[in-house]
Image 1 (cartoon, rainbow, N blue to C red):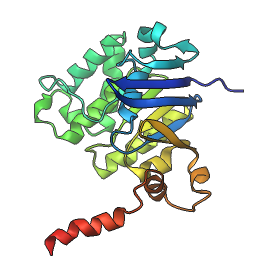
Image 2: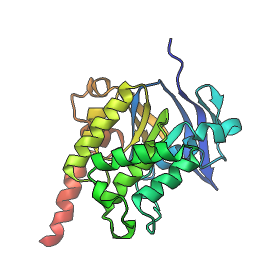
Image 3: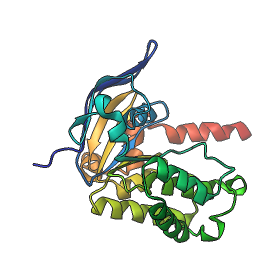
Image 4: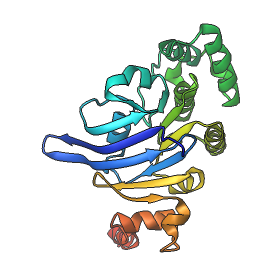
Length: 256
């Protein structure tokens, strides 16, 4: 039996009197792509921040490769790559300078950083811009640099929080292919997104969280078995938003 690379047990988190996460339990096997979805405020970002070691004050236990996160947070961080949706990137740096900085933080050799960064930037169409300051870059260009920075150290676990934000159609297709290939190489992907069609296509398992609790999990086929619906419809039904069509109509009534 495969030992889970991520084990989350009775995870809870509160801010004052507001309980953001309530008794989350989840096992993730090596090489799996987990689609972690839920409405705004459901607890997705809090889960991610705990998982990558940004929030240390939580209830319950998380094991990464069998090691407790609390006691091994620095070592575990080296095995994780993180791509946030909106990151404060150092705009005065060039992509190569930024990736060199990130790589060195991960203990990488300078020649290896330059080799990987050059190849990845080239395949993202950013080779001509690798020595330009990023303050002139579009959101999509910056997001490509962020994606590279999250995987340049070849992490075993990759946490993606809306990684396709700002990307053009071709880049979206490429990133989806990259995610699939990384999983085939044994990397574990923890994928947070609102883009249901992408989650549906790339995920091995889908975990739906609402109001700080997991309310459904399984493969897409298992989730739709009882309803025969799309992931968007399942999401709306389980989060109590089946009347979205009526709401859209009411919204447009404002023009009448």
